[in-house]
Length: 283
Ligand SMILES: C[S@@+](CC[C@H](N)C(=O)[O-])C[C@H]1O[C@@H](n2cnc3c(N)ncnc32)[C@H](O)[C@@H]1O
Image (cartoon, rainbow, N blue to C red; front, side, top):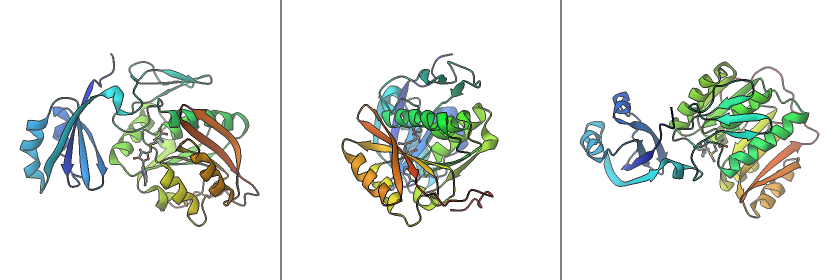
């Protein structure tokens, strides 16, 4: 079996369409992204007539734009395929089976195939960190497909809390957890990174955009973790992040460039975080 993803047909709808009927999946519906009051409906086949016909029954929604792109253009501009991180493989389900050395990831139309430079940088920093230390509890803010949290679990972490504001990412992360038989070690939450940033953990992962990382670093009490892997910045933006991080007693352990993207591994010096009982699952 090859990739089930060929072309993507994307319909931008005015309004937040948060109750898409399950029956749409039989018509090639893959999921929805929400942004700025609009819903972006993804289909695997041309569906304009279908969308126009169905929308009125769901409420006051109207079609704004339609576009079609090859699946490869969705995230990193390359087709999905197996790749190595150290001695591990990360592969789509149509190429490999899960095993102790293989993490199977199907991102669907969430972010997190492993081919984006920001993700790739974080994966390598995870490998580096777990080569020397044993973080047990991981908080993954902006989990997307769950790839970073699942790789941390594969490397030896015991538990991961994964947060994303897009329902499609929550679905993908849960499905990838099941695919790798690690769902019992994951909590996947639909929520905002800023609100969930105070959860205590050994390791915090945040591959987000610059403005959001800055907001995290300005949040009082952040981070409640000894190690942080931060990514999502280009060019010289990492210097701003490092400056802000220093104000939080975070010191640079390692910096990794992949293409234009820089990822940082930071450690909190004199960390007074005591890692004990699981905190309640509330932000
Ligand atoms: C660049 S992707 C990273 C995905 C994955 N962690 C990876 O490294 O490939 C950023 C993710 O953060 C999510 N996100 C963006 N803003 C967010 C917010 N305010 N709260 C929670 N998740 C957010 C997006 O939906 C997306 O899945």
